[in-house]
Length: 403
Image (cartoon, rainbow, N blue to C red; front, side, top):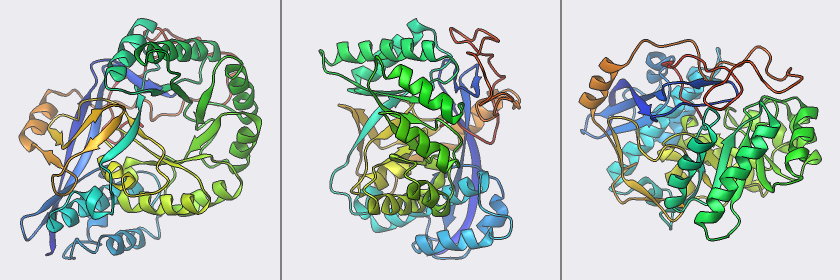
């Protein structure tokens, strides 16, 4: 079997409401989802979700190769980006191709990927994550009632701009999930997307912990600040979760060595091979891991096979336009199917039709770090975005999708 070509596509996730975080919001809830399809000479194609940056150049590392040599090809792609580096969207492109190769390998073996990787149980525990910073209280409650009907008993909210509002919103979701679980205490997490300084993080989380029991605080300071993250984890009761924006084990090592991370995260766009290696590194230090991202199908299959999986992020309950997945959500978990490979199918025509309906891309959104991020003295008060206290950025950018 040989790799013969690739097809880049960009579909959309249509949330039907604003979505975003402390860095900005997609006001119309229409979020681009880039993906790539890798073809072979035996008619088996694999699908990976991720950017298209440097795609043509990176593909030369695997063209004509046997896709079943997937981990070797992953390292080959890294070597092909050696000079310029593999960080950022380039790492996501490598991850998308890597995920597609795992899809091909499992299809060729006639097994779902979770089984090929050694998984015993198709059930992958999940938590709800609504990218919900722009919702009013009424919308927030309604959103998490839907999650609760699928058995979700843990929730991660977006925040970091106004700690009083964060507390009120966390309490609201806590009450929604408690009622749905007939009095059982739910799990709560807060993701501030690198919006604070070290001192702000300790002070704000300490204030929340007077009335709330947080499982973790996510990305409280900059992703690479090992000393700062370590200071936060020493200064609060909650665990510190981080890692979704790191690219390669070399970026995880200093954080783990400094005691700066309690829950190790990896993003879906990093790919399956990256995730498995991160899990092995974390396991050596008795640390749990948690995949993040919308439709993290590749990492869900991998999570079923590792010993230190904690929980996986569940964002929208529906897949992107033109994408179907052999999984369902029930009793607080993803339930993976038996379709060989990832169980992901792509309808090119539906995606192309949706693209024709989409408007032009915008430079705004959650991927643009605000000028004063980490330098806000008081709560953000420069706008009113559907019940929040920050300005809504324009929608759409074709290179990212929120995590």
